[in-house]
Length: 249
Image (tube, rainbow, N blue to C red; front, side, top):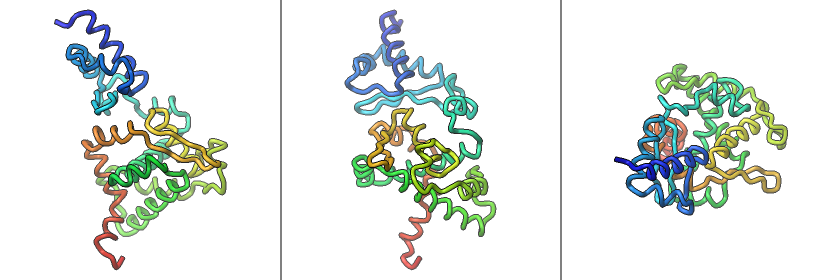
């Protein structure tokens, strides 16, 4: 039988996780969590509310399950919470931007160390997303059904991106203009920032994203188990692999 003290401690840990999403080893709650009774209660609370716990070596993360959670963020909630997500089209594009960013940092150890140290500028991300969407556009010409199997509306993603304004300066960031490409990227990165997964630096007016250890842990302990992540990552990096195998391309 769990005692009242354990339940009280477990509740403190769980509600701290709900608020902060991550508890690191310096938090008083970190040690408390690993008391077997407390841990069992926290896992029970998580399970009942449709969330689950990731235990990384120096941190505990709380993640919302994609379905059946009392805290699930569906599109409507997302729109209320993040005003920059205006339409389904922009929502899909923001997802592509985030996936593109994750695919860029989730390669090899050298890439991880480099991006943690140097970060990725919004302009580099814009080029990367543009290259990806141009690649998808050329595939669509040859295979109009491309993306259907993966349940991605490629045509809409390509069209929306193509006709977005290209920023000549930091206009999109400064004005928070989500109708420009850099503005959209800024919006996508703010979503990751509010989750405490990245740091946004504005050095010399060139905004840069530095991934935090929390993000790499989230990728390793969560996304690697998602077939959907691996599938989209494959779509993101397919062309490079082809080039690698066929030097004549």
